[in-house]
Image 1 (cartoon, helix red, strand yellow):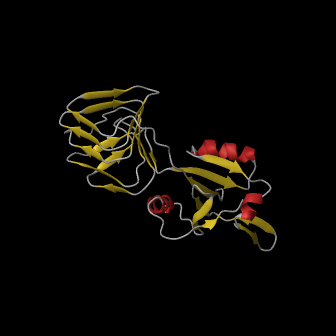
Image 2 (spheres, helix red, strand yellow):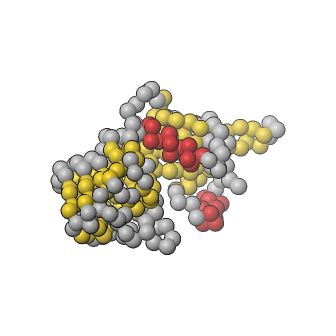
Image 3 (tube, rainbow, N blue to C red):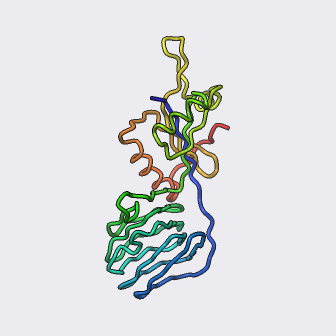
Length: 229
Protein backbone atom coordinates (compact mmCIF):
# COMPACT_ATOMS: atom_id res chain seq x y z
CA UNK A 1 0.00 0.00 0.00
CA UNK A 2 1.34 3.46 -0.92
CA UNK A 3 2.04 6.06 1.74
CA UNK A 4 0.23 9.04 0.28
CA UNK A 5 0.48 12.47 1.83
CA UNK A 6 -2.75 14.35 1.26
CA UNK A 7 -3.19 18.07 0.71
CA UNK A 8 -6.69 19.56 0.79
CA UNK A 9 -6.99 23.03 -0.69
CA UNK A 10 -10.04 24.84 0.64
CA UNK A 11 -11.76 27.04 -1.94
CA UNK A 12 -14.69 29.42 -2.11
CA UNK A 13 -17.12 29.77 -5.00
CA UNK A 14 -18.16 33.19 -6.31
CA UNK A 15 -21.78 34.31 -6.06
CA UNK A 16 -23.86 35.38 -9.07
CA UNK A 17 -27.17 36.92 -8.06
CA UNK A 18 -30.38 36.16 -9.89
CA UNK A 19 -32.84 36.35 -6.98
CA UNK A 20 -32.95 37.27 -3.29
CA UNK A 21 -35.53 34.70 -2.23
CA UNK A 22 -37.07 31.68 -3.92
CA UNK A 23 -40.33 30.24 -2.59
CA UNK A 24 -42.18 27.43 -4.34
CA UNK A 25 -45.78 26.73 -3.34
CA UNK A 26 -46.45 23.26 -4.72
CA UNK A 27 -44.90 23.91 -8.13
CA UNK A 28 -42.75 21.55 -10.16
CA UNK A 29 -39.37 23.07 -11.00
CA UNK A 30 -36.87 21.82 -13.59
CA UNK A 31 -33.25 22.85 -14.13
CA UNK A 32 -31.69 21.39 -17.26
CA UNK A 33 -28.09 20.32 -17.82
CA UNK A 34 -25.77 23.32 -18.13
CA UNK A 35 -28.12 25.78 -16.42
CA UNK A 36 -27.68 27.41 -12.99
CA UNK A 37 -30.18 28.94 -10.58
CA UNK A 38 -28.45 31.33 -8.16
CA UNK A 39 -30.25 32.76 -5.12
CA UNK A 40 -28.81 35.32 -2.71
CA UNK A 41 -31.09 34.29 0.09
CA UNK A 42 -33.35 31.45 1.29
CA UNK A 43 -34.92 28.69 -0.76
CA UNK A 44 -38.23 27.52 0.68
CA UNK A 45 -40.13 24.56 -0.76
CA UNK A 46 -43.74 24.34 0.39
CA UNK A 47 -46.38 21.59 0.14
CA UNK A 48 -46.16 19.50 -3.02
CA UNK A 49 -43.03 21.12 -4.47
CA UNK A 50 -40.76 18.88 -6.54
CA UNK A 51 -37.44 19.78 -8.17
CA UNK A 52 -36.09 17.91 -11.18
CA UNK A 53 -32.53 19.18 -11.03
CA UNK A 54 -30.05 18.08 -13.69
CA UNK A 55 -28.31 21.46 -13.64
CA UNK A 56 -27.02 23.47 -10.67
CA UNK A 57 -28.61 25.39 -7.81
CA UNK A 58 -26.51 27.83 -5.74
CA UNK A 59 -27.73 29.83 -2.77
CA UNK A 60 -26.43 31.82 0.20
CA UNK A 61 -29.40 31.62 2.58
CA UNK A 62 -31.19 28.77 4.35
CA UNK A 63 -32.70 25.63 2.81
CA UNK A 64 -36.26 25.04 4.05
CA UNK A 65 -38.07 21.90 2.92
CA UNK A 66 -41.79 21.81 3.81
CA UNK A 67 -42.74 20.00 0.60
CA UNK A 68 -43.91 16.70 2.06
CA UNK A 69 -41.27 14.85 0.00
CA UNK A 70 -37.48 14.76 -0.42
CA UNK A 71 -37.61 17.48 -3.14
CA UNK A 72 -35.14 16.08 -5.67
CA UNK A 73 -36.32 12.50 -6.19
CA UNK A 74 -33.85 10.71 -8.48
CA UNK A 75 -32.53 13.81 -10.28
CA UNK A 76 -28.76 14.02 -10.42
CA UNK A 77 -27.91 17.73 -10.42
CA UNK A 78 -25.81 19.76 -7.98
CA UNK A 79 -26.64 22.04 -5.07
CA UNK A 80 -24.11 24.49 -3.60
CA UNK A 81 -24.55 26.22 -0.23
CA UNK A 82 -22.11 29.15 -0.29
CA UNK A 83 -23.34 31.52 2.43
CA UNK A 84 -21.58 32.71 5.56
CA UNK A 85 -23.91 30.81 7.96
CA UNK A 86 -26.69 28.52 6.72
CA UNK A 87 -29.16 25.90 7.91
CA UNK A 88 -30.85 22.89 6.33
CA UNK A 89 -34.29 22.70 7.89
CA UNK A 90 -38.03 22.49 7.43
CA UNK A 91 -40.52 19.75 8.25
CA UNK A 92 -39.16 17.19 5.78
CA UNK A 93 -35.83 15.51 5.03
CA UNK A 94 -34.09 16.47 1.78
CA UNK A 95 -32.30 13.97 -0.45
CA UNK A 96 -29.51 15.82 -2.28
CA UNK A 97 -27.53 14.24 -5.11
CA UNK A 98 -24.33 16.34 -5.24
CA UNK A 99 -24.05 18.77 -2.33
CA UNK A 100 -21.20 21.29 -1.98
CA UNK A 101 -20.69 23.23 1.26
CA UNK A 102 -18.51 26.36 1.14
CA UNK A 103 -18.29 29.64 3.04
CA UNK A 104 -19.24 29.61 6.71
CA UNK A 105 -20.71 26.98 9.07
CA UNK A 106 -23.75 24.89 8.15
CA UNK A 107 -26.31 23.68 10.71
CA UNK A 108 -28.52 20.64 10.16
CA UNK A 109 -31.97 21.16 11.72
CA UNK A 110 -33.62 18.11 10.16
CA UNK A 111 -32.34 14.84 8.70
CA UNK A 112 -30.78 15.09 5.22
CA UNK A 113 -29.01 12.67 2.89
CA UNK A 114 -26.52 12.97 0.02
CA UNK A 115 -25.99 10.54 -2.85
CA UNK A 116 -29.23 10.72 -4.79
CA UNK A 117 -32.37 8.59 -4.94
CA UNK A 118 -31.13 5.97 -7.38
CA UNK A 119 -30.53 2.33 -6.45
CA UNK A 120 -26.79 2.94 -6.24
CA UNK A 121 -25.70 6.36 -4.90
CA UNK A 122 -24.37 8.57 -7.71
CA UNK A 123 -23.77 11.86 -5.90
CA UNK A 124 -21.12 13.19 -3.56
CA UNK A 125 -20.70 15.52 -0.60
CA UNK A 126 -18.12 18.24 -1.31
CA UNK A 127 -17.07 20.44 1.58
CA UNK A 128 -15.41 23.06 -0.58
CA UNK A 129 -11.98 21.51 -0.81
CA UNK A 130 -9.81 20.01 -3.54
CA UNK A 131 -8.09 16.75 -2.59
CA UNK A 132 -4.58 16.13 -3.89
CA UNK A 133 -2.74 12.91 -3.08
CA UNK A 134 1.06 13.06 -3.36
CA UNK A 135 3.40 10.06 -3.31
CA UNK A 136 7.12 9.67 -4.04
CA UNK A 137 6.42 6.79 -6.45
CA UNK A 138 6.56 7.32 -10.23
CA UNK A 139 3.73 8.19 -12.64
CA UNK A 140 3.38 4.64 -14.02
CA UNK A 141 2.92 3.24 -10.52
CA UNK A 142 0.39 5.99 -9.73
CA UNK A 143 -1.74 5.25 -12.79
CA UNK A 144 -2.07 1.58 -11.86
CA UNK A 145 -2.72 2.34 -8.19
CA UNK A 146 -5.39 4.95 -9.01
CA UNK A 147 -7.12 2.59 -11.45
CA UNK A 148 -6.99 -0.43 -9.11
CA UNK A 149 -8.49 1.52 -6.20
CA UNK A 150 -10.73 3.85 -8.25
CA UNK A 151 -9.40 6.90 -6.45
CA UNK A 152 -11.87 9.84 -6.57
CA UNK A 153 -9.08 12.44 -6.35
CA UNK A 154 -5.93 13.50 -8.23
CA UNK A 155 -2.73 11.59 -7.39
CA UNK A 156 0.52 13.47 -8.05
CA UNK A 157 4.00 11.95 -8.49
CA UNK A 158 6.77 13.46 -6.35
CA UNK A 159 9.52 11.23 -7.74
CA UNK A 160 12.32 13.62 -6.77
CA UNK A 161 10.83 13.89 -3.25
CA UNK A 162 10.95 17.70 -3.33
CA UNK A 163 7.39 18.25 -2.03
CA UNK A 164 7.76 15.51 0.60
CA UNK A 165 11.01 17.10 1.79
CA UNK A 166 9.54 20.62 1.85
CA UNK A 167 6.56 19.43 3.91
CA UNK A 168 8.80 17.47 6.27
CA UNK A 169 7.29 14.02 5.75
CA UNK A 170 10.48 12.16 4.73
CA UNK A 171 12.26 9.86 7.17
CA UNK A 172 15.04 7.27 6.94
CA UNK A 173 14.44 3.63 7.82
CA UNK A 174 17.47 1.92 9.38
CA UNK A 175 19.52 4.87 8.16
CA UNK A 176 19.40 3.52 4.61
CA UNK A 177 16.00 3.85 2.92
CA UNK A 178 14.24 7.22 2.65
CA UNK A 179 10.46 6.91 2.92
CA UNK A 180 7.55 9.35 3.09
CA UNK A 181 5.16 9.20 6.03
CA UNK A 182 1.40 9.23 5.40
CA UNK A 183 0.33 12.69 6.57
CA UNK A 184 -2.39 15.19 5.64
CA UNK A 185 -2.32 18.97 5.31
CA UNK A 186 -5.28 21.32 4.91
CA UNK A 187 -4.25 24.43 2.97
CA UNK A 188 -6.56 27.45 3.08
CA UNK A 189 -7.46 29.80 0.15
CA UNK A 190 -4.53 32.07 1.12
CA UNK A 191 -2.04 29.20 0.72
CA UNK A 192 -1.47 28.69 4.45
CA UNK A 193 -1.38 25.37 6.29
CA UNK A 194 -4.50 25.50 8.44
CA UNK A 195 -4.26 21.95 9.81
CA UNK A 196 -1.58 19.25 9.83
CA UNK A 197 -2.29 15.59 10.68
CA UNK A 198 0.89 13.69 11.56
CA UNK A 199 -0.97 10.49 12.43
CA UNK A 200 -3.42 9.13 9.84
CA UNK A 201 -5.82 6.25 10.53
CA UNK A 202 -7.35 5.27 7.14
CA UNK A 203 -10.48 3.98 8.86
CA UNK A 204 -11.48 7.23 10.57
CA UNK A 205 -9.34 9.95 8.99
CA UNK A 206 -11.87 11.19 6.42
CA UNK A 207 -14.52 11.82 9.10
CA UNK A 208 -12.02 13.79 11.18
CA UNK A 209 -10.95 15.91 8.20
CA UNK A 210 -14.57 16.65 7.23
CA UNK A 211 -15.35 17.74 10.78
CA UNK A 212 -12.28 19.98 10.92
CA UNK A 213 -13.05 21.52 7.52
CA UNK A 214 -16.48 22.57 8.76
CA UNK A 215 -14.86 24.32 11.71
CA UNK A 216 -12.12 25.92 9.62
CA UNK A 217 -14.60 27.25 7.07
CA UNK A 218 -16.38 29.10 9.85
CA UNK A 219 -15.05 32.22 11.59
CA UNK A 220 -11.29 31.97 12.13
CA UNK A 221 -10.27 31.41 15.74
CA UNK A 222 -6.49 31.23 15.42
CA UNK A 223 -3.88 32.23 12.81
CA UNK A 224 -2.54 29.65 10.38
CA UNK A 225 1.10 29.33 9.41
CA UNK A 226 2.30 29.84 5.80
CA UNK A 227 2.40 26.76 3.59
CA UNK A 228 5.69 25.61 2.09
CA UNK A 229 6.08 26.81 -1.50
